[in-house]
Length: 375
Ligand code: CU
Ligand code: CU
Picture 1 (cartoon, rainbow, N blue to C red):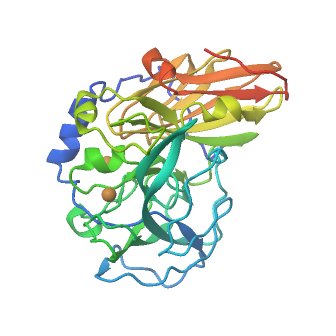
Picture 2: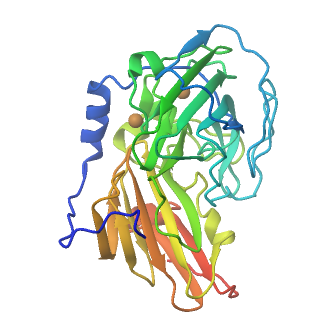
């Protein structure tokens, strides 16, 4: 596609942030960990281009207000004050949502503190953007404005930090107390698959409790067309109990040791083994992979195929071809295209196999075959 930059003849394949500790330290020292106590829900309203917005608008209020409730495809829209029931066995919808019309995309993101299911029969007292971990996927085009009202429907202070933004974090990503809200506006100037998360200290705890999500920014003119696109957010859970008789909550010692009980795609261990993603024979499929951590990297690999095109982190200029496994660093995101040549079940994993055993494995069912597969 002419709008897409030509690939480099020599792959530039530099591992980024191999050591998650380094990433955490860098984030902390950059002062990105300001915060806002807010929300877990994202609703999108229209995107008509109005007069040019100010670069950043931040307006905090102490008390909660009623949630506006434009709906977002595939998502229920609870009132801001109601804590919806724990998520059932329905999988997190991995399909990339379409970009809305216009160049200004308005969202209301409401934070909920509520119990969710993170593995079969395992419940966890999460802190959520919306009602799921990860929170809803935001999808815009490069150059568009993202306008977010963050409402803190929880009791704890929370915030939201968008990696796609160029804003003063102490202003835009500030912490909001329970019941408060903040309004943030930024221009998505850089294309890529980005993370957003609560940055309220200790960010380790807020992310480990479920406060993360993906924001996809399409490059100008778009990426080459593919048959289907999925978003996969990698993250880990650290439990202070088994979560079966009663919901578990965070074990901070395990989180510091980076020794999780579960590692997941889109928040629930093994959910795409029981509810595989689908594709047809010959399809080219795009995966937007964001490693939310809080601390582990993801070594993305699909069993039975090769990653034809790989875009490093947020760049669209350094394209790799013919890659077997690629590192997605904690706090990073990458885009992968692959083609499935024959019918069957194709596991997608972090090739760090301790993570597979802890739940970070899903399947792509190509050609609607029967059965399942473990790896
Ligand atoms: Cu938080
Ligand atoms: Cu961050």
